Image 1 (cartoon, rainbow, N blue to C red):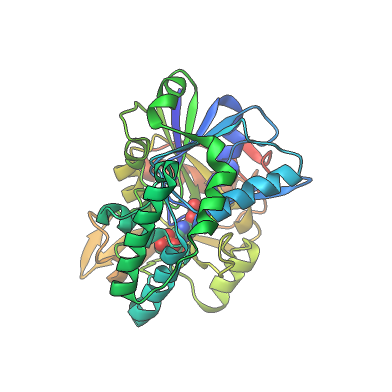
Image 2 (tube, rainbow, N blue to C red):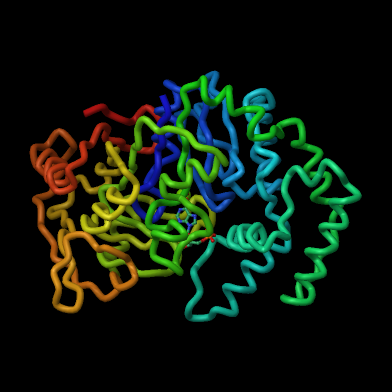
Length: 402
Ligand code: IMO
Ligand code: MG
């Protein structure tokens, strides 16, 4: 069985918790996209983990993880995550593998990320400043450093000299602490494999691919330029692995409302007290940067778009309990863009200009309430996709099969 579990919105849908829960039925969890910009929070009850690079496998169970070449790896963050787990009594050295073709996020990438954001001024993307965009850009510039490059330290130093000379000339950024990254590499070098070394094992295993961010942040299909640097749509699974694989199931995760961190259009956004009320109720602060998340009502045109491009065949709804106790709950059902009614946008460049038409639901006291049933049935009938689980609360076991 090959499954992908991915975000249908702008990230932070609760993928980490859901993937951890589902992981019990799989042998491997594979990350195919993103880097340490991801922040996947998993609460076990007596302890809590926030994964940035390590796949969200259930740490208590015998499940293995693989970080494929679609991911950009910040060695410092990775080592810290491994070390923190070790301190908590979880040794994952025999459970985690990393593709040697994965590119490394260098300190200069983080400096450039920050610098580019500053120079964009009003047009800043609101990145996580984790160096993600610059690391992916250097991969395409063909000056990036891959884990495989550390196998020959003399050649690596020459490559580092080339990249730092370019950064100095192009961006006036200076950096020469090469030994630091070499040491960081040495700490994790036993985890590195070539993609073909692990291919057969993955092919013979039950694998769940863990998405990062959400479809609306996909580099091509998202709200460009307010997106991340990677293919976080399900299309990223194969490019991340580097070879073809057949997926049996595409499980899209969505929140019962919508959040977004960083800049960019957000048609159903709530401002002032209303937005603050959702932010407080849902504890909507970034797991990576701590930034307050922008909050708004569920947006069906965008959900339909995300389903259309991802091939989503079932959905899991998270955080509906956050809306419990509200008098009214709204859902955006249609856009009016320049006088044209739109049920599902065919592209996202002009959604910032849309007026949203809403349907209003009576609130529900709890999730057994028939008003909540009404809400979920409405989403299923509008999208044509079944909701298979409802996730409530932060704990891994707080999830109900429908
Ligand atoms: P998870 O996996 C929410 C957003 C940033 C910014 C844009 C580009 O936890 O859902 P980047 O640093 O990637 O170049 O920033 O993407 N972003 C996320 N938003 N959840 C994430 O990850 C995100 N990763 C990046 O806020 O708007
Ligand atoms: Mg997050």
